[in-house]
Image (cartoon, rainbow, N blue to C red):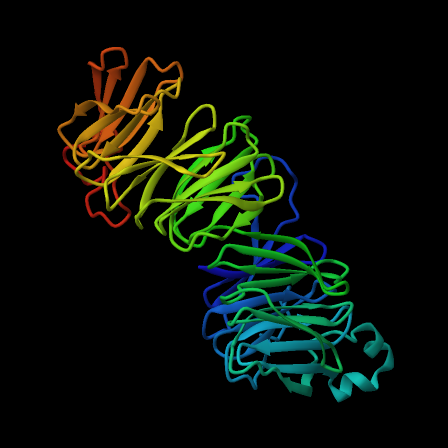
Length: 475
């Protein structure tokens, strides 16, 4: 597998670390469609373990490669007689940085245990005596040796380094740690400029922009991306996805926004055009099982296993309503009537349906009748009938305005997992555990048809399956 790669400064070559091998590919080809546009230029196999980092010299003729064999290897781009590479040793953990300074014979190496080493190149004495040759081949790394000029130790309370980047021109170093902190250093004096904690997990990537005034920090486990201006000490960009599974999602009426609720207890609002999250609500303490936009698009509502239903203002970005039942219960689904005045939620443990007034926040009614957890809930197009589905193999229809409660029970052969009304309200569809879709007409609530979706939702062949189309006699 390829763990590191880098283009040469002129973009004509691509160096790739494939396991223990360093491959240099010739990319100087035309833009016409070609079956194999890249040509293998040279392969170096001196590393004894997987390659962790690749860096080009500004001349484009030399490469510095870090490897898990604890060495930093200096290779040439082209074949050089009697030169198979130089190995720089001294690290006790795997090097994750090997960076040349711009147009010079200085090389910095850094390992995950925090050991930073500065190397300088010196020509052989016989080459140094020839002044003309010395000027011409001053940076011919095949005709000299590397000397350790200085070393430093980056200590951060035992936390290992997980990412780093060195800006060659400004000699600014950013180091990301396993505990979610990053620190900036100014070389060669090794002066600490800034230190900041930005995450709760290991920082998987750190990189400077071209002018070194911005640094991008990424955390793969949390889906986190930050762009930090270290001179003004402020965020330029900040994004983070959900940490756990997304349990519910809903589009705004105009389709420009999406709200998501997750098992991490967060409610996020996303811009559909940019794909970016612009607000996160963290008031829930347990998984969010249902989210809905209020019909006016100025607010969203969410239901959670923590026993609360909350309404969030999308203008001031605050939680302006919190709805609770008479007794603590875990809410499993949520819906809002077309007028936006009534909000209803079904529970997982008490099997009840709760209705509140959006304006006053008061509990209006509690419907009981299901014998299993409520899995789905929705209003019809007029908002006069509330339908709920449950694991008790039924769909219950409730009259929400006259106070008569349950008015119809639609029985199924298996647990009902979800339901929805057709936009015109003339038909309702319920999905069951056996893969069936049952369609009910809403005038007399008689079943009109069924779709068997078991074969459509069956998973395909796994990558680990031994039987494939090639070796299966049945085809």
